[in-house]
Length: 266
Image (cartoon, rainbow, N blue to C red; front, side, top):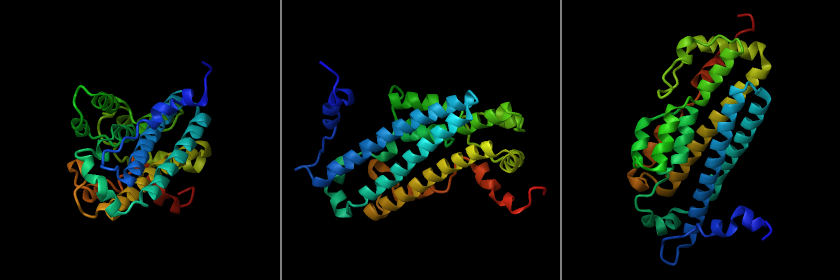
């Protein structure tokens, strides 16, 4: 048989994956399933692109690295915009099928946890949400041991002659990314004297801000839907999500903003 649109994209298989569990089923459960399946597809694409970003930086290819980051930022805008669609569902509409979710929760999205790990927000305990023999546990264990995007960026800077503290280059990549005043001095100099690399810094900051925006919008969406109730799967719901706010992946890029109040020769 010749290749067709449907066979190439596995359309029949794709459309068979939306299987509501509520009686009827409840009308809004289809929306809930589709939105979250689409999120998982975009998470897959983000991981695909960020892994490519790592390869570009390791190969010292700045221009394609910037292009890849631009694509990631476009995906982030879609991730944020999808919350607008979820917010068309009222609390009563969600309640009509919520009990069918049982212990299922977005808290269990291992691809989102992979993104967090790759971007630097590593918490080994997250793996305990998944059986040791599972794909999720295996993938998260691999990401835990891998350098973060920030580590790859610092190695890029070091190869190109920028002063990067040795302790950052040799750090334990399973631990949180620390603030470094010495590195901040290098970053300020990059902004003032090396525009192409400064552009890379700005795209990383855009990505960081995009994730923080998604987290904030997600918190408010959950709050307007279930209020202060516990989340599905036993999580603390809104209170847990609020604790994830304002935790940047690249803190040094945020810390240097105040430095630009001084002149270039200061």
